[in-house]
Length: 201
Image (cartoon, rainbow, N blue to C red):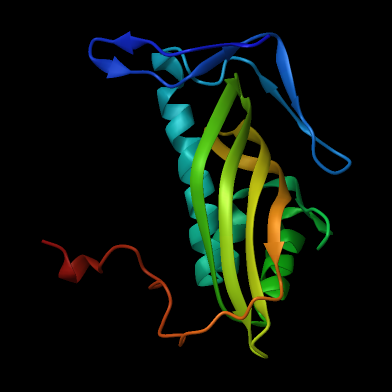
């Protein structure tokens, strides 16, 4: 049996924790091993690392949504591996090939949006694992629908003070390639997040 709990530290609720040696997350031919302590207890020394890892997952979605190959490539370790599971299996190795594969996948789509929902992170020194609930919606230029719910299972590494993906594995939970997606494509995310220096106050 697993033991889950919630604590309150000076009025601030911590996340749920599960204590045991390790957890194997099944999926396809590969899973991710996560420590049973998933950032649940207060660990001030890990707060900055967890925030950086969460920012990495958000930056991934933002780069995909903007089809920004350069930013996307920068999120990966040099020898990173990006795997998309069945039934649309594909795999790419090395940051440059991963970035090229992302463009290859999104190019046929008239629009595409990836949303990152809840996530758990486990940190062990300069290595970490994480899992995120993800939703994707898109439509091809020939009106083919693409809609799914899935999990990203991550292995991360910290080099020279920066966290990057060593491996990302996308595991489909639900996939709809048949139901039409209506509506008009109006626009996409702006390339720049912040205004130019001239426009800042």
